Every structure is written in structure tokens, then in C-alpha cells.
Image 1: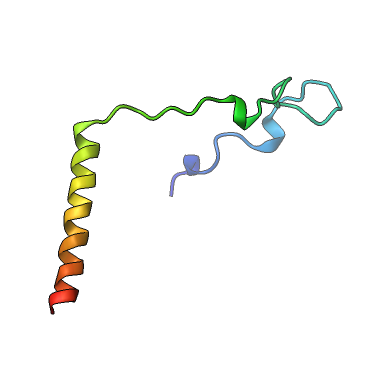
Image 2: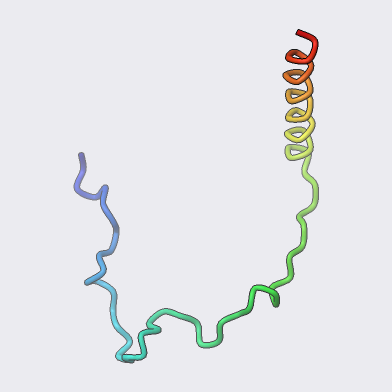
Length: 68
């Protein structure tokens, strides 16, 4: 096993910013989840094919159990 398989940085290697408020790397103003707009991505051929394949396999398995 190579020695570089571990973490790249240790906790001791992180620099402190000098503030003792405990926020270190936190953003100044937290963003509420409701403020972030959630928009669906456009359909890709790969995604549509995956959905169609999943429906086909599910129906095939269901029909195999239902018919016997």
C-alpha cells in the first residue's frame, strides 16, 4: 500500500483564521433552503432510455410472477 492513500490534509494542517467564534469556514450569511430555486434539468436521451428500460424490466418481472 502506498503512503499517499490516506487523507490529503490532516485536521492539524488547516489554518485557523484567528476568530474564536467557532465558525471557521462557515459562510457569513447562511442561505435558507427555501430561497434556493429547484429547477429540473432537461431530458437527456440517456436518462429517457434508462427510465424506459427500467419500466420495461419491471413490467417483465411483474408479468413473469403474475402469469407464472
